View (cartoon, rainbow, N blue to C red):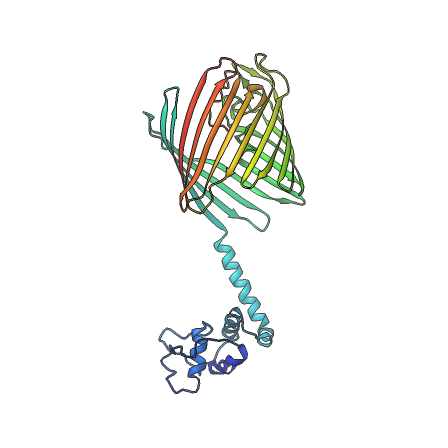
Length: 398
C-alpha cells in the first residue's frame, strides 16, 4: 500500500487538527493535492516522516506501518473499526510488544529513603544520626515478587565510625492457591507494633479477605532486651492472628509465643502474650486506637501481667507540601505484656516495663521531604525512674 493512500482516509478516520497547521514535510509543498490532509494528520501526531524531513508519499508501506497509523488514529479517538478489524493481527502483535517492553521496564524498581535524626534526652545523652535505606523491588511473575532493603546508619557522635551496608530485608511474596505467602527476612510489625517490632527470618501465611487469618514462624535476627537473639540460640517466635474491618471500624486479636526471652535480669524458656485491639474514626480527620495486651503469666512478680496503649491521630502529613498531622499516645506496658515494642521511648525493659505518654507531629516540608517530631516521657514500672526523650527526624524519599 502506498503511503499516499492513507490520506484518503483522513476524513474517514475523523482525525481533526487545525486547518491552519503547517505542513512539516519538504516534499509536500503548498498547492499539493494532499497538502491539507497531510498537515492535519501530522499535527494530530498520526503520521510522521523520515529523518531527511520527507514524507515519501509514493513509498510502499508494510502492514505493520499501516497498523501503527491506525493505532495512533484510534488513540486520538478516530472511528476506524473496519481498519482495526483488517489489521487486528498486526495491532495485537504491536500491543503485545509494547506491553512486554513496559512490563520489562517496571520489572525492577529502586527507591530510597534518607533519615536525618537528632535525639535529646533528660538522661544527658544526645546523638546525631544519618540512616540511608535503598529498596529493590522485582517482579518475578504476575503472582510473585522479590523485595530487598540495604541499610547504612552513621552515628556522628560515636568515636569509632562504622560505615557498614547491611542487607536488612530480603523476602519473597506470592500466592499459592488462596494463600498469600511471605518468606525470607523482613521486619514484622503487627498492628501498632507495641507487642512486637522485630526483624525475623521465616515464613508468614495469610488467608481470607473480609476476615484475614495469618500465622508466622521464624527466628529473631534483631530485637531489643526482651527477646533472646535467636540467631545465637536457634529459638523460634510464633504468631497467630485474625483481623477484620467493618466500615470505619477495624479490630484484631493475636497470640505470640517465643521459645526464649530475657525478662528483667533472667532468661525464661518461653513467653506468651495475647492482644486485642481496635481502631475507629470518631470524627472527621480524627481516629482513635486502643490495644490491650496480657502476658501468659507474671514472669516478673513486681508488676502486673496486663497492659494497654491508646492513641489519637488528627489528620496526617501526606505527599502534598504543607499537609500536617498531630498525634498523642498513652502507655502502660509492664514487661510481662510485650515481646519487643516499637516505641522510641525508654522501654525500661530491665525495670519492669514502662508507662507514660508521647505527643508528636508530622509536616510535609516539600515534595518527598517530611518532618517528624516526637516527645516521650516514660518511667520505669518498678523504680519509677523517669526519662524524657525528644526526636527530630527529617525524611527524604526518592
